[in-house]
Length: 128
Length: 128
DNA sequence: CGGAATCCAGCAGGATACTG
DNA sequence: CAGTATCCTGCTGGATTCCG
Image (cartoon, each protein chain N blue to C red):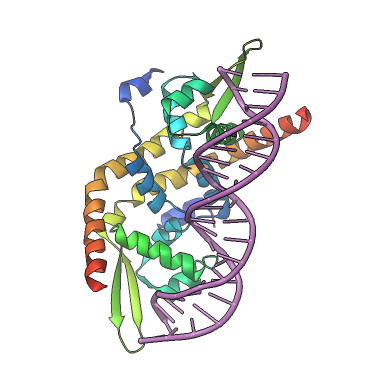
């Protein structure tokens, strides 16, 4: 049972490993960080400014996770006034097309989904 | 071709609405449910059997969420021995290609990521 | 500047029991 | 069969404080 067999059947296999990976890469702040670093390397404080709603703790955790997975790279630039730069890695860049596809889907179908939500909420409202 | 094609592609904007939507659609169990229902319509108990690790509560919540977003459809078949069937909607089907892209990415780059993790963990171990 | 450490509230999600 | 209703707990993630 190879991966290609699964594809030939039209069947996706979602292992625990897959899910764990996606959880790490697609979590709340990873997309924003990825988004920023794809544009240009940035420092910690720069990322905080670019993503104002993230806390320092969450940003740190996100960067560590992405670094551990080889998605971003941490580069220490100076030692006196400590400067650290974060960069996207080649592996990180490969993540862009699929993520773009998802974001594009979200943007494209948002109206339909909003409509579906309104329908659903109204139904439930009338039923109660 | 060029290394600055990211700039040429323009900027992704990730709004809170986008994130909320992705959280609802890409959460822990949604992918598995979507996966099952893309193959064939199924009943509640069938889904539980197909996804053994999901609890009844989480499965219910997942189905409700997907139903509210117009991704799946809930069809009551009988009333005596109550039978309910869940089906993927046309809107739900549009979700497949981007999700496939992500899963494909995960499968393809899992080795590189595992290697990156090993490297990272070993570095941190040595630093201690 | 670039974090680490701590405390704490909220809630997602599991286990269990009951129902139409 | 297809859920609802509670109870309970671990983990996430915010706020705050401190450090090289």
